Image 1 (cartoon, rainbow, N blue to C red):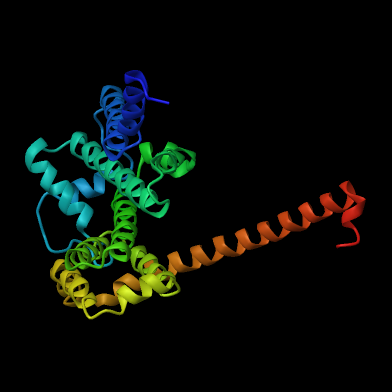
Image 2 (image 1 turned 90 degrees about the vertical axis):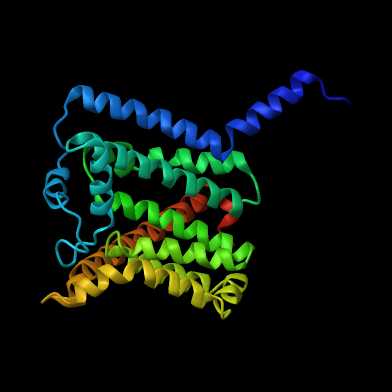
Amino acid sequence: MERTADDVAETTSKAGFYSLIGVLGAVLIYSALHITARLIASYNLGEDDPFDAILTQTLALGYIPGRLPLYDWLVWLLGQVTGPGALRFQLLKYGLLTATCGFIFLSARRVMKGDAVWAFLSVEALALIYQISWRFHEGFTHPVGAMTAVAATFWALTRLGDGGRARDYAVLGVCVGLGVLTVPTYWIYLAGLIGAAFLQPALRAVLKRPAIVLSVSVAMIIAAPHYVWLAATPEGLGALLPHMVKSAVSVAADFSLSAVFLGLSGRFAANCAYYAEPRCRAGL
């Protein structure tokens, strides 16, 4: 059966909506509404912003040992355009949110073999996370940058797994180099991501190629200035350890609680099946 012009127009419209441009457009509208409402309500800084406003009066390789500087550098950079005040913090926060959504969409579409609808829903599912749907608008500074770096790194790894070209290794290096300048917790994520990747034959193959040296080199070039500065401070690189240990303990605790919850849920489901269906008893 031939497709009418209306069918073609409808398909094209849906394809345009469930696309990277559609995702970015939706998030930009969402961000613009929140920024406008926030600045109309108050031009005061958010709960986590004043300290960054003090630090970013100047540009430096580092500010406080253990506090990674990428977010502060971006605040300083935007301040050169917008001047001091709340606007630069709002633009940065929602700009990073938009980038995060873009990377999640690209990753999901790649993992789901081109299914743009489910990739779009993967982005929309962020609204179900309390820290993003509510707390994100009240505070958060450096973790927002880490959120973007996590999404970008995962996208870069999936891109590398599909391509394996030199530029794919370079892109992964850029994402990692920026990621290790966001929050110390990113190191834990990176270790987990690499460990998981080595369990997949296709990803393990590309990570074992000599070209991975390009990724490492690019990452080191980006991150080296701050880490050299940090190593020269009295606290040294050890200043990152307390943050990493705290995060690792938190992750382990969350995992343990999740395991207990899943175990209890499984037992509850089994009991329900037992009493609801006598024929299952023989199998249990």
